[in-house]
Image (tube, rainbow, N blue to C red; front, top):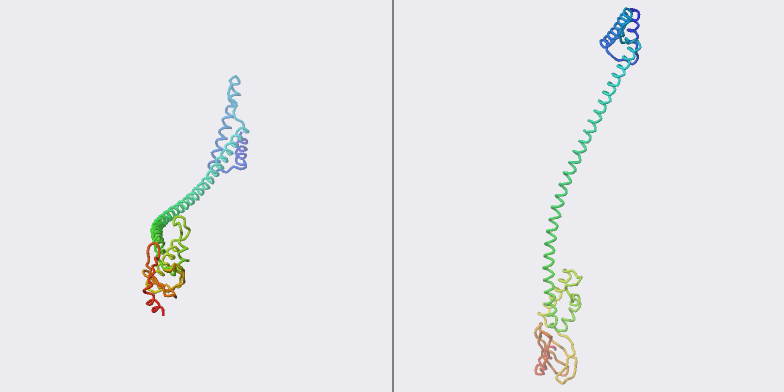
Length: 268
């Protein structure tokens, strides 16, 4: 019996893959010896009392299998613990990475919100400025339309030479201001150009060769003298003269031969 116990002790300690401490090994060996002692005692009892039915004692092979299973279980537990620890570290690392990504995204979102707020503010400012420009443009359009209407009325009262001189600018004015494609600035330029020439002519004496119907009913070339924009005279080479003044419908000429000599003296 002693020999068997020693063999069991050596066999248990020689099991490959077993990683336990000395105290644990001693405990296991003691447990195995107890199992064997119980087996021997039970065998002796069964020999002395053959008539009783006792449970069969565990054999050495069964004890070895039990220890193998226990060791394998410890290995599995150790592996699971190690895998769990590794998985935990990986999970923690991923969580930290996700937290950093979330923080970066939150920062970008905050910057984007700031940018959107600034863009909205700038857009509102531009919209307000655009509304002001539209209002100013509407006022200018209304003003130039009124000025064009006055220039058309005035143009009919201008002397013929002044009309001829300003005809190019006059033709640039739109016939229908509501559908014109001309810019407001261009329309103002045309109107101001005509008014500038009209103002200049109003302070000058203009002499022009024209064809008029004389008192005799014949048409002849005469020299017309325009004094500013309100009064005009003409005299023909034959000594026939006339006088005129501006009306809303144009210039109205009347024969006035009595002033022919004075006019010829002025022209000489």
